Image (cartoon, rainbow, N blue to C red; front, side, top):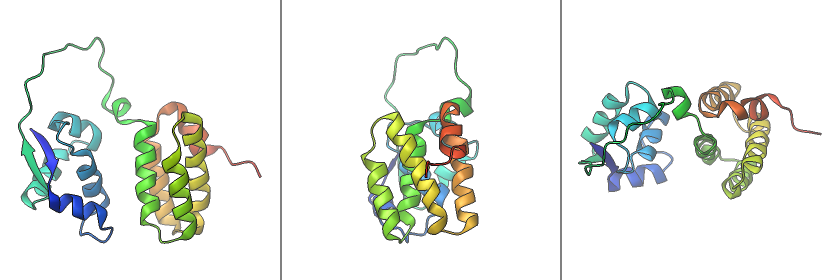
Length: 168
């Protein structure tokens, strides 16, 4: 089972006032027709099947059957938490959060983060956005963003992004 976005889902993702919560938006973004349910569970958590089923029932997803793939046996499978962590995932998440802010600085930070390609530039842009987010959003919102980043950032980038202050 490889869920794929419908036209309704594409429209909902572009409209920031769509009746979707953050978790539903994240699931829709990840449902690209290439990931199967097992991968989505790894990325979204154990309740992903129910979330996917609800989005399918509501018309946001349709299910494409997977193409048979040759069976490969991995040498050592990383843990679910390790597979879920990536700098790209953190970047995409923060881009989404900045897009929700109606503040000129958020738009500039969004452009800066979107233009990053290398790890160092991405880490710097993430730090910069987190440093400026409190001026644009409530403390609770900033706390939730920081916690989600703590979940998705690779262990090697956690301290650099979340704990290192920017130079004055």
